[in-house]
Image (cartoon, rainbow, N blue to C red; front, side):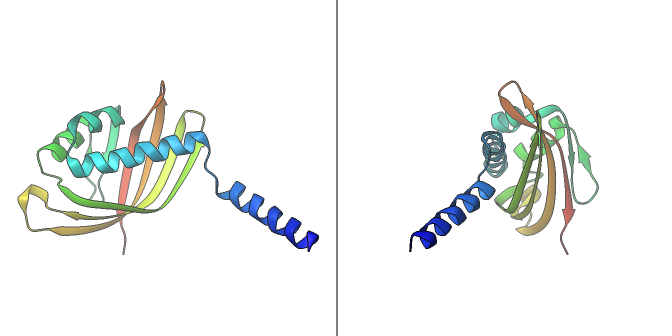
Length: 144
């Protein structure tokens, strides 16, 4: 019985160690979540705060936006996200740079049109600026 409990404890230890996120990964995940919420809420101040001044924001259709056009198109409803769900997220942090991948499923109402849906694979690059993570680059591709 003692061996069984020791083995169980060992398995538990390794499983939590493998799945545990570092402090930096948690901070990046929080920034990604704040960005998701700001995109749904069209929160200009938060979008600007989380976007690097040199942002390159690539859409699945090939359009690439700067920080200014990304924020403006969310705020004015040209890119209107009603819902955004992120799944399968992975985060890799190396120094002051983080790479985030996830799947994005969303309902949209761009330019006031009838609701649409998007299913995308997203790659984003984040850079730590002082104590805050800012999105430096983002690229989306359509999922088949």
